[in-house]
Length: 257
Length: 291
Image 1 (tube, each protein chain N blue to C red):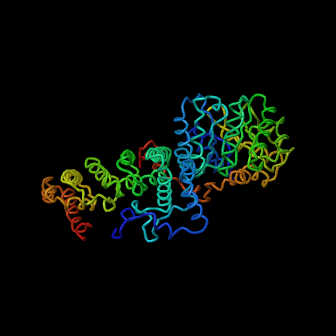
Image 2 (cartoon, rainbow over the protein chains, first blue to last red):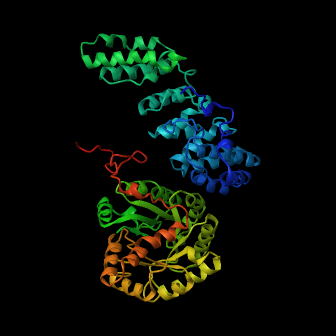
């Protein structure tokens, strides 16, 4: 998790040129050139994985990392950026209608492509409903794509961001890939995360170590949730869970940085 | 022997059917889009139906070791409802999806002008998307409907080898055999074709470009009619390679023209994890199995 993520690069689709050659590259260039026609985009969008591949965009990325962009993600983002340029004469309405349509009829990979593309599109807050829809699911691919980009970091209101981070902890999406963290981790989020940790520890269960990415910004929340007291619990499983929780602080990415 | 049922509406069937089909050797199916027994009234319900054909139903089949493909279309019966014409606008997106191996079922129900337009428009989409086409022939006035079907196919310019004409019988097979299109027979418990008559037509016309399906749906039908017809072929003295040609090689060759078959060989043999989920649901309805 020490590599800079694609989502925070200036152009996350640039790496496509390193991995695409021959027929797939020609096909994508052809689709992008014709992207002013929404039917071209709607046909190319579902076919992207078949045409370009579905592997990691960066060869050194872990294929199991839900935050890592895939080749088809980057292809979809590039296509939508071309569509945004092509439909600029019709105002933003044409682009928004296209995004809504692609998302509404998309499978998980297509929806992830729409969400990731938000980083490269000329949008204000119009993409927020799509982020909110993805964050209502329990699909880690969509949750990760909805919180991984700088667009989400820019437009998600605090209350949505707090709930999104809590959901990431709950479903197992690593917080290191949440673009808004740690910068936007506020006291309210720290309170929610600490309460979650307390609940887990009280049940004798483990807490993911990356919660410290939030808690290190507001250490007072750990005390307020009375987590240190759990270290002295007479119940051995509970005491053990507290010890593991505090041990995670030393191993957390925030501590290393 | 493994079988590929090239036309079956699994959305209307139960997990018992999937288990019995797998036990009898069925390893792959194609589910064409059709009407649901009761008319739909809006485009939105088609989008949900198409999503389930490329999503939940494929997942459900995989949970029972069966590779599920589908064909997407606005069916001829519902082509007559003006509220549904905009389904045609949804098609380019859905026809581009993985595992969509054909446009279908298209063709005629009552041979109206609306059916003419929708059939021709979908043949154009098939050519644009590079997909083969599954054509339904009407239950009523079948020979006339089959002749008109073949005329429209010819006018469209699609290659006959990319067209499968379904629900044939003693009166319509010869017409299609001469056209160069593929021929299919739907074997039902009491209507359309039965095993004995199908085998007689296979003996008369041979096994090239020939497919047999159960077309099992929400009506009285039997998803094992492919298996029963294969048995009837053997009993009638057909060699094993001829049986395999009809029930595996031919469907693979026809739908393989899409370049999108999802046959993974050994993967289908692996015991599926019944707790796996798709869009948040499992075939155990979210429950974990008792240990």
